[in-house]
Amino acid sequence: MDLYPNTPNPTDELPTDPTSEKKIRRSLYLVALVGLIAPCGMCWYSTRLEAFEVILIPSVLALIVLAYSIYTFYQRQQQQDLAPPLWRVSLVFAALAGASTLALVWLVRSVGWSSTSNYLVLALGVWSLFLAGRRVWESWSFSRRGIEEIAEEVELDMVSIRGSHPIYPQLNYRYAGEYRGQLRNDRVHRQIVEIREAIETGHLVATVKYLPEDPRVHRLEKWWIEKDRTP
Image (cartoon, rainbow, N blue to C red; front, side, top):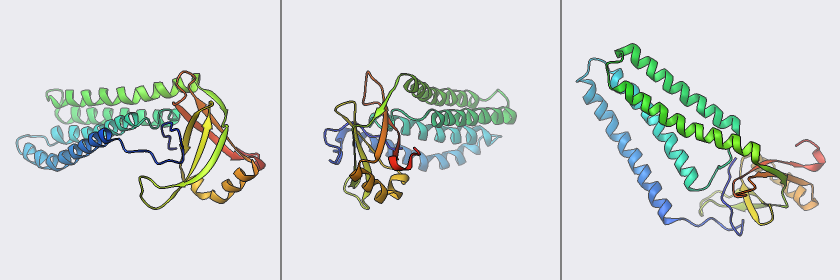
């Protein structure tokens, strides 16, 4: 599910923020630089160590944690996906916990506790679990404090992402008076004809859940064609 920040006109394309774009480009350049340097550094450092695992295990875990950190900060900066489903963030938390535990156990069995790489793996594990745990808490808090109501207005538009092609079908909806949101996913793409007919006949129903203190934080809970009677 794609959630996008509130905009006055849902049919307008979101303007590009130069500051955000610059930060994103810097992050991508950093990731590319690390990806180029890391293999060479690993090969050189492995020749000076008795156990290759000392550099291999922390490096692999670092790449995983780095990718998740960049994704999390990017989503938060763009105010996207602020209310993820609890099952999804819990699954990510469990996956990161499993990866960190496996890396630490593997490293300890290979070289024991004498290597400083153990503390690096511990630090990476704690950081990743902090980020993932915060997402779990936010999702759980949203599920308890959120208000669910029927969307006041639902429309179907064909939009392009920053002028690119192809054109994507997008549901635009209004809730809580003046707030708006958008949704693009495979189901919307597959049911373009049915959705358009349902909107014209008034049979398309959607429910939105949002935080009362900050309605921008929301999620389109479900939508269905009323004649089907199956949300």
